Length: 297
Length: 297
Image (cartoon, rainbow over the protein chains, first blue to last red):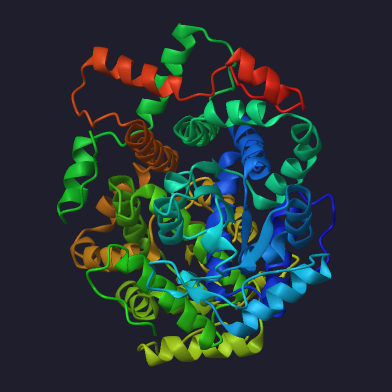
């Protein structure tokens, strides 16, 4: 591993990259996994690299669901195993959820390596070796174990693909997804979408378990039933938009203003609007000579 | 290469992944390049996977600058060589810009492979082999050729790192960056930031060259001088925000409405605001038993 000083402003993000790299070295993480990690990094950056309140809420509801489930299963892929193997095992132990390896780019070798990694991190049983093509999918993620994902009532799917997420939902399973992209098909089709970094979500969920374990089932159901995933998704998108607006203000040199002063707000919007491409007739004519369109409004 | 049907809704994006994969196979693209590609994919998705008007404008200004330059240089890394080798060579030939390979994760082997790729795509001379550590940077990107990047007045840097972009600017070189992330240090510190996919930007720029070549220098300078990079950045961010708002409306089932009807607008904003986490005192109390904070406002 490359030495990264702990005080580096992007320490967490760089450490995560190193972990994913180590996952590739170990034969667990695929190249597609690196691309997916990059996409996640971009969204994490936009969300502010922190667990936002709505994600914290979704994580609480996810814990309730895992505790309420008859046969909960945690689906593990190469990225999840590289990023948080110990936390996945702990979550499984504290909630009674089974662990099952399920890969989009499945090879028996990768399955074995991920199982070994989870066992090294304390797992007793890890499903995935004896998977059969039981899901109506045309790729390798169709392969699941009968007493695992196939029979599960609640499935926790960190870093999932959209296809399988939809299929699991169609099979009337409750799906908890961890996906930093609130716009993804996964986030849109899961029942509980945790828009958070897996490395922050899992420790947070693990912390919550003891208290929720003390609650009775009726209270846990009440929390679950009050949950509206749309609100959580819209809130995550709203957070990104707020961060983008802050950046626009920074680019334009507009100082931060927490007051709700309507007048000031209007001025800020006005300034940002001026940030839209404006028609300068003389220049526009010249650029347009070649057909490029200089202006937007 | 995996066979991807041309009518696949994400054909372009999937083809790009295949190209980057091929770049890794050829030894040109690094693992870090895959992560960077993933980040780019996320921002391309947010921008709508199209050349927005402000990017088109930045591309026009970039062409003017390359034509006006005394010693323009195109800096090439492993991702750029994998994605658009022929277009980089054509841009170089039509503008008289030199090609120089410059890598963050530099190995002589990768330098050689990228030079070979560019020559296979028609390049005559490609700099980069005889680089010396001339830039004030603590990593391998410090290594540039004296008659190349070191002496350049205008540098075109597709898919750049922020450190070097700042250093080049400090050296009073005009920097044109291609970066899908309008918030990146690269985009923020370049003189012309093209917030577009390299695979769309290069053909578009190449198309523009003949017409701009017919213009005199004074007219080209006028276009360049009227350019305000801040406007382009703010516009790109605004586009992302608009796309995010459209997605919020989709999640909430609010139909698209192009009218400027202030009343309707207000209703929409109201509905979106309701998308923020609301306090439900009973549920909140239960979730808060364990310290999680259910609500935001």
